[in-house]
Length: 243
Image (tube, rainbow, N blue to C red; front, top):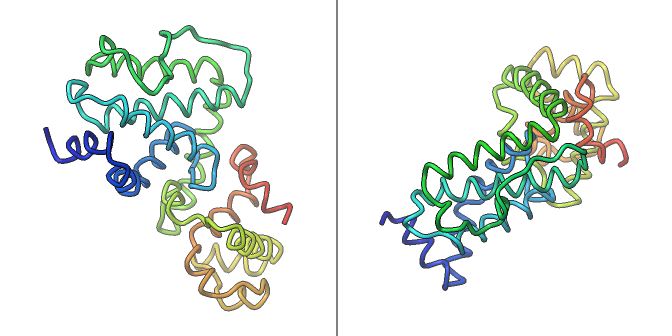
């Protein structure tokens, strides 16, 4: 039994150990949720709550005989996210899966490494069957924005770690994004120089340079998405237009 597995077993009965385990794995949980949702997820999104509950269920349901904890927990998180998205999207196509396939605790006979791989495939296939077209278009948008953001020196999935969390900060970032989008000169300056025009943007938006610097990648990504041809990704940033 490795150190992580010992932590997980301890967390089953020790609340402090559980809190520590969650904190140490927060970014990993968000990354799993982002991959399953095909968009970056922050801890202010509903998907974060879904993923967190899935992680806790994985802790409760984990036994060392089930192999790697991360492998096990990753499957549980992705199932819960897919199930949540399917219920939200409410598309008609349904895929028959094993009863309990999206539950946090797996039947013992389904817990082998081979079956976990099979179940992962079922999850992927169910998502494809229920929303193949949306999934394809989402992946295309992510690939396109990923190419754009790489020119600024960061990745689409880096946004998980730099997105604003507090409501006040989100509003300030939204003001900065709207100001940037509404000023063609600054927007061109951004794209030409590959960096945020801090001084000008702070003066025009009233947002402090500290906030602009801390959430630079988020502001750049939001401005590129909302001013580009990304209808699916733009929907997740619609709150910015309503500020």
